[in-house]
Length: 184
Image (cartoon, rainbow, N blue to C red; front, side, top):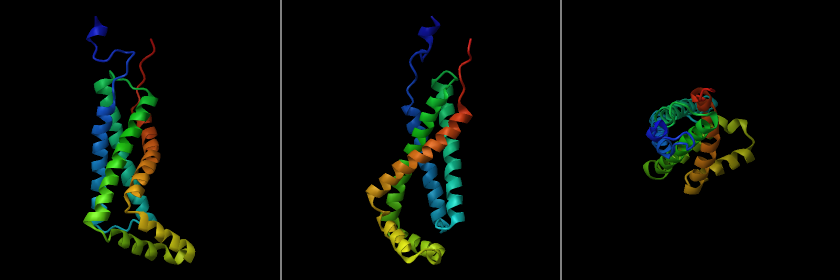
C-alpha cells in the first residue's frame, strides 16, 4: 500500500518543469536586478575588472538559485534524492530560462529605456581598449556593438551564453546538491 500512497512512484520521475520555470523566473529577476544595479551605477563593464565583477555576480547568483531549485525539486518532488544527471539538467534549464528572461530585459533596456546605451558602451570600450587594439580590430569590434540591440542577436546570445553558463552552473550546483538513494 505504500506505493499507492506515494505521490511519486519510484519508477516514474517527477516532472521538473514547474521547478525550472519558477526558479528560472527567480534567476531572470536576479539577472535584471544585477543589470539594473550596474546600469544605475554607470559601471564600466568594458574593463577587465568590470567584466570579472559582472561575471562573478552572475555566476554567484545563478549557482545559488540553481542549487535552491535543485534542492526544492529533490526535497519536494523526488523524495529527498536526486541523481547528478537530473540535478545537472534542472540546473542547466533554470539558468537557461533565467538567461532568456534577462535577454528580454536587455532588449527593453537597449531599445526602449535607453536607446543610447549601445553608444555609451562603445565609448567605454574605445576608452578602455582603443589604444591597445589595431585599428581594423577596433572597427570590427565596434561594428559588433551595432548589432547588439537587435532581437535576433540578443536571443542568440541569450541561448548560447545561457547554455554555456548553464552547463557550468548546472555542474557546480548538481555536484553540491545531488543526493543518491542509499544502496540496500
